[in-house]
Image 1 (cartoon, rainbow, N blue to C red):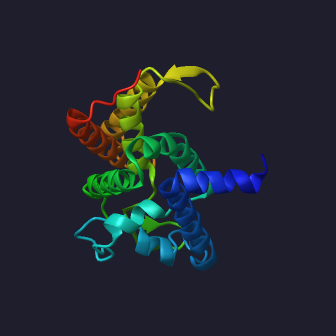
Image 2: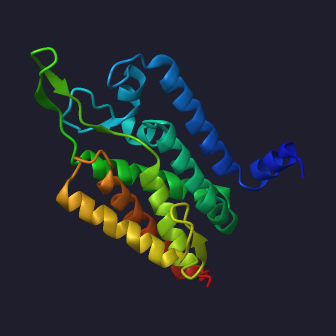
Image 3: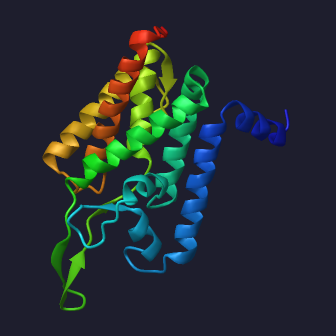
Amino acid sequence: MSYSNYGNSFQRNSPIVFNIIVINVLVFLIQMLFDGHGPVGVITNKLAIHHYTSQYFEPYQVVTNMFAHGGIAHIFFNMFTLYVFGVWLERVWGPKRFLIFYLICGVVAGLAQMMFLKDEIVYDPSTGQTVVEIGSALGASGAIMGLMGAFAYLFPNTELILLFPPIPIKAKYLVGVYAAIDLFGGLSGGNADNIGHYAHLGGLIMGLILVIYWNKTNKRTFY
């Protein structure tokens, strides 16, 4: 099978996942081209979500933050995970329901993280001046955690192979481990490690609520 045929098959069978990945990549390219060289680029700062009391907050950021990323590794692992879990779920639900699910989880994840963001005035020893350190969050991780939660609910005993280390683990245990890490990280460090733990947990919880609700009238849990 040629590469082009594979790409056409992916686009045809999972159009929402395909287009979400394309949008994320395009946005990331725009960030790299137009952000400049500051610690927080102009484009990234406008797309990322800020606390609602911040001068940088705009209502549209509850959506745009899930399509922007902070680096190549960030977008690579998010898009890889989106592909792994999203393709299966889009085939189970269909494009429309999948898109609704993804957007709801992403918005809730952004709002959850927003509540723990804050702008701080800090001293910069290199310049001898005080500067505003902008608290913001971005990335598709929260929406993707919602997908992982739904996948673990529908396919709990499906074995997945981790990238690091390359060992098999059932979906329900993998998501449980991630949830425990985020819960510990959120309670112990908050935003200190530069990871959106509350976004992950918000997206995961919202994803589980949605899939459980949908599954009440459509019993499609697979083992």
